[in-house]
Picture 1 (cartoon, one colour):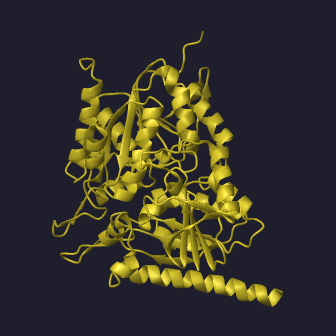
Picture 2 (cartoon, chains in turn orange, cyan):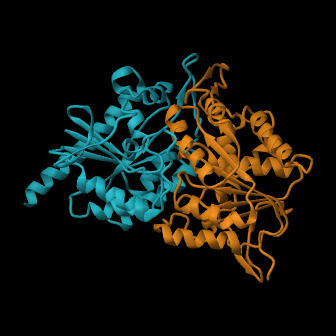
Picture 3 (tube, helix red, strand yellow):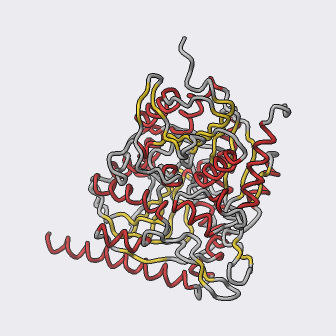
Length: 267
Length: 233
């Protein structure tokens, strides 16, 4: 039998949320950048087929996907090939083309993304997902199951409206046998750059409470950081370029916990 | 008389936002009864069909489509002036189905929500293309989370920066109406979490006047459509 395209991948992490707009793609991107800085080889598989954000976040939105003998060659985000990406964003003829597909067509592409991308040797494959508990999620978990995905990171914003959906995502993880590595509370507070006053624009603490209630690790609270938003707009490496920015400590801590949780010494 | 239909099957937020968490749907001879917030505001959501806040709706497209059809066919809305439909993000089953199932009705159009950054706009352009593809008229675009004024020093921060000109530039380029911009206000999230009307609780917020002006423009659009139709009839 041919060696599977995922045989060289050590750990698979799904970034999930029940809610849209909470920062899944941001977390996937920053986690990848932080793991890369720690010397790891990282891939990101973007299975948000209707709203693929990953290409722009790495400033490779104009790249195309090439074929090789083992399948599709992922797009490299850095010259040193330390981060590789796959997204439907690379397959669109025009960037504004809408992918107006029903479930079955989405499922077929996701299966291809999982089996036909020649990832090579990776320490981490991070899977960025759209919000919800539907076709993309079911198909991704099913396709990855033979490869024993490491687990899921859930992203929420602090308010009850967001937590309410992420609770359901936790149930999805339980029902599909996905190990929950932890919950991240994103957009947790904003420190005014002018006067340093902290305002909890989207409330505070809901993510931490949910983690406690559900008995899963709380990975940390990431504050709103206009510099982070700007970095993502420009496709820049926030982790390398803005270590003094307000979101950096939390993001670095999250990456460290992932590294600690996946080191050979840990069970 | 307003009806709010929540077709975000996996992430139904509407019950909580309306202060209707824990309510259940009742059946009668004439179908499913909406859950009423006020006499003139009825709501339907899959949230009312779930028995626990932890219940997940892990359904593929066809099952979601089936429930949306039921919502449209079996809910006894009565005489309604406005049926508002809240959708999940994307351009997939829910969106195709709702447009298809409503094709016999006259749909005034879609209100599209974005935040100011390009990361959001790039997806919203796809949504606009979806609307054009399925011939769904676009009433206009709302730029949400548009700036934040610090309550202490009153300086404005662009937390989600409009690096490519925000919704305004996009609307200009695509010849679509910009209905308005809503600034960030912590009271909005708080009201939604508590199931209270932000407009009633915080009437003095700049966000309130933004919402009200947007709503007015939507009503004007709908009134104009109506009077145009009456002329053709």
